[in-house]
Length: 383
Image 1: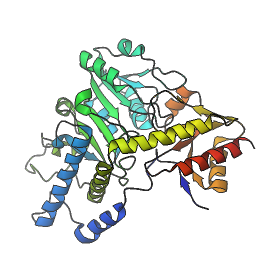
Image 2: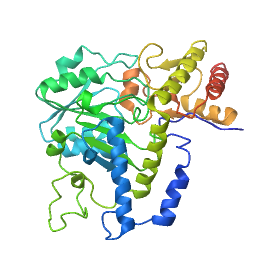
Image 3: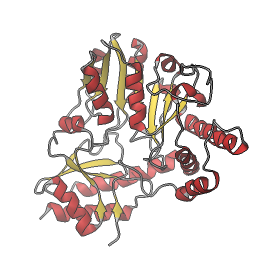
């Protein structure tokens, strides 16, 4: 039975063509360190890292390539923002759709005296926009939000949030886990202070590599949360005060950087409009087919509201874990069931604690695979 991969919100698969070969060649032929050795291969690897940062900076319209900080993924970057900026007594605002990569560190900070508030959302996952100017006040230090829910796919209106944050002098950080490589994100136009992206989702790169892109304003306020060797200013016991070294101690994931660079080349060659258009067509096809299937409901916006190609279904006659099991066993369709590391989102959508079965499309998902998924959903829902 051929497998149909429908879990691209977790990680993209397949990856960019040739990714494994490129990474393998690096490990086999040039598996050295960078920024440490006084020899040409080390300098060459450092150049690859610089070029990868330039690609990311250009792709997301960041302030400068030196403001691109490599991380192990989005979770690490989000923690670096939260733990490096907050202090006792600070006020933070998020949406009610956040992933645990934001919710758990903020929950810990509430034990240390911060105030954490959530912008309310309607039952379809859309933000209650009237609440934004009321909740974002000069006393708010940080707004940190997901660009799109990993449960319902709702895209958050960053323009309105950014405008209010600018007026109130509030730092705005965006979790781009679900949209980086799929939606256009223009840091400078929006005035974002931080954009955090993983390499392994819609950027089509490997796991274990990501980036945090900072504004100069936030970079001067942010404390490094991991300290160590940087290969620069080794005479000091303090971390260097310049970017990117201040936030990149230790040995970076060089095979991951090489892989991400390769994936970015493929992504840029395809073009964001092509990628987004393909996924939008699949989403329309899926929603249209789903509308005639009984005994299954969609947790989220449905048609007419901006969203990523992420869809959470609730089977009325089956446990959600059982439905996911049947999808794989009988139809070869790989999905994810449960709470998707986002219990707050499921509470907002009314699917807590039972969760849902999530289908998420990628650039390599085909219309035939969407049709096969709709057929399987219909069969399981009618049992």
